[in-house]
Image (cartoon, rainbow, N blue to C red):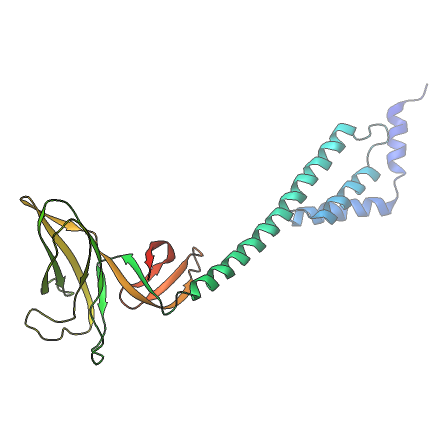
Length: 236
């Protein structure tokens, strides 16, 4: 009676040197890579089939499982390529859509504003919108410089509802305020309390760009500086 272990060992020794070298190269290539592409997967599978133990062939269920894994990996890789392409396309469209806002006026929440230099009779100061709550007996716009000193105080309409406000760029003394950064605040007196209202400021869009970190569309404005497109409340 023949010893099956002896036969098995003899058949393994009969493998060609070419097959053994191919198996070693495939294993080395696999060790150097962090992910397999389609060609790598097929090379390794063929090498595995050629060098399997004739007396202990690969379980068909394992073979099918490997094929299923490859199908999933291949599908995910293709999906990643498609998503990357779609993302690049959407970014390009986002820039084109944003370019249509250049020269337009947008409204966004903010209270840190920039006052430009005097330019003839052109309006200088920021303007925007506020929502006055019910019961307000008075509403005031207060403008402060970078040191916190009050530059201008303007009485606004205290009727309930949405109202526009503006600062003409002058001080309480009537002189032109220096160009630079200012902070505005709208304070409503409701009963015995002073309530700070949300201010939405109008600004002109000078340019647009994509944030390299987040991919968000960023608008460069004259009054509010840089802000994301998601912060825009209105386009005028």
